[in-house]
Structures are given as C-alpha cells and as structure tokens.
Image (cartoon, rainbow, N blue to C red):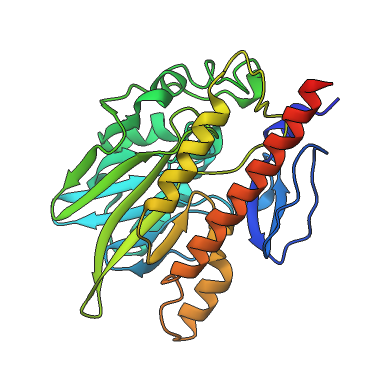
Length: 307
C-alpha cells in the first residue's frame, strides 16, 4: 500500500531527470521529458532560489521546487501561488529583495488547490489584505482547507488553513490590475479547478504571450476510470489539453520550475544569454508529452477496468 506522501507526489516534467515512478500505473512519457517524483517535505520545496525578473513585469519569488510569481503594476501587485504554510517568509524576502513591498500585493491567485500551492494563502491574505481569486471548481477545496479534495481530502496530513475566496472565477475570466490583464483558463483534471494563466508582456520592443501552466499531470493514485468522486476527470483532462494546445505561447512558465527547466534557464539568463524563458517550442513539447502520458495512462486504466 502506498503511503499518503507518495500518493500525493507531484509528477514534474524535468528534462534529463531519471524516470522513477512511485506507482506502476504512471505511464512513461514518450518525449525528452522524464517524470520525476518529489514528495511533500522535499528540501527543494523550501530551498531558496534567487528571486529575479523573468521578463517584463513578471518576477520569480518562489523556492527551488515550488514556483511563485510576482506580477507588478503601478496599482499594486499580483501574486500567483502562496505555496506551503512555511513559504511566506521566503516569498516575502524574495519580494523585498527585488525592491518591492510585500504589502503592495493586492490580488492573490493560485494554479490549483493543492497544499504545495495554496497552503500559505490564509496567512498572506491576513498580512497583505489582498483579494483572493480562485477558479470556481477549486473554491470549495480552498475554503475547506483541502477537506473536499477528491483525492486527498481524507488525509489530515495534507490539509491546510482554510481561506475565504473574494472572487469566484470562471473559465476565460479576466483579472485586471493597473496595466496588466491575466486570463484564467480552466484546465481541470489535476484538480477540478486547475487554472492556467495567460497574459501579454512587453520586452525589447516586442510583445510576448506568457502561459503559466497549472498542472497537466496525472498524480500517482489518480483514478481516470470509474472515479466515483470525480466522474468527469478524464473528460476534464482532455478538455484541458485542448485548451493548452490552443493558447499562443512565447514565454513558458508553470506551477513548478521543473515544468519548464527553470534552473538551467536561470543559469543562462544570469550568464547574459538571450532570454531563455522565451521558449515556444519547449511549451509545445511539454504539452504534447504530458498529453501522451495522460492518454497512455487512460488506456491502461480502461483496459484494466474491462478485466
């Protein structure tokens, strides 16, 4: 029997990482991405990473393993992902190292309602007075502190402080602050309300399409077939991939830096190379890889259900 920690393990796409499935049902991806599993408590989730400007008004303020983004505007700032309960000091220090004020965060968003991305939300809302905006299908999970999550709600070790949502978002809703507009795209499956964010930024005289992927991954233990708690899970994944493939993308970001090879790209950025976060091919390859992994897993579970 798998432990709760392994059941929750995030399946991250890390180029070049060894394939080490925690569950034999997880399909081996076909492209150059390899699935690597990290479990709650992994040092990289709390390990500091240099805060830095990625492009335009988008800054990285997360840890080495958990992504958090500060989007600055003249009217205040937007934070995407509060991460762990213990992440707040790291995020705050990163924001201030960049020369911004933590209390100027006006809006808090998340990629999806799992504790490694939203457990710190209640504290950040208390400290900043920011407005919390969450995709409709994840609102119940957020406001219950994880108790209504279809996969992990029965595990007390994976719960977190509940937080009140100020604005319920729906697919294609816009979040506006100052001169910046983000669009919320529902890419469900990983969670019911998993959200991929898109926006446009300017840099070097050009305008770029940015996509911050929520998560297209099938976690160990997820039932794609005959899932009584989430009957439409496979359909939601399929719809989510359709959405991801439809989005124009120049700048590829995501809920974990491992999705888009952040560490290697940051090293290139620091070395003065052309901005490595401009990676439209990397985005297309990642989405295609994750879709193939999903389809393979769905086929396996479908065949197993027939026996």
